[in-house]
Length: 257
Image 1 (cartoon, rainbow, N blue to C red):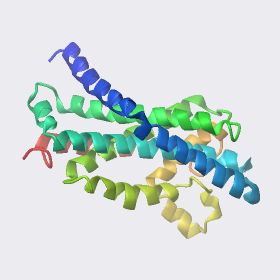
Image 2: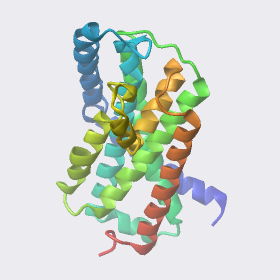
Image 3: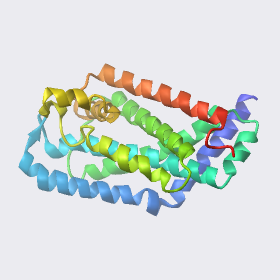
């Protein structure tokens, strides 16, 4: 299969995914903007004024990168899990699997669709944050790299969730009972340096901690985690999730009846 056909297949899936979430922007782009605005008002203005500084920055400025990353995580994950499960539920996925298209192209199309939504919402939340605080990018490439790789990680996670889901209720289990707790405990609202040594060690088992701190370093120049270690962990997550996702596609587990 030549490169032109591969690119056409990938681009077709990606455009379909982007059109899907932009067509229903009231459901996909507006709610996270409203939610994050409430976070900025409640945690930033009301609670932040009582907390004072954290990590040498005002509390609002400190949590802004974490809130942006939270929006990227939830939306990149949510886009792929809902889209691929819908494709599987409506039997459209079977047409893709029998087409002369490599499975990695199918996976890439859905993943980059999730990345597109995650980055779009992240940009919206970033612009909203400027109404509440000032953000000066400390390391541009680290900032861009972190947000892109994070969106890839959770798009892959959403894909795996969709493969195993047997009903629409199943696609809400992981976000509710795993993703949300990990996000809140991932250093979005606090520095793990405030925790006792034992709990600092436990926190380092949370993959979201590495992503939030890498992004915070890119924006503010401070991090609880060494940036080299953080990027290494993120790349390991991408490698493992990609390999497992391709395994599921190749074997047809949870997809072929």
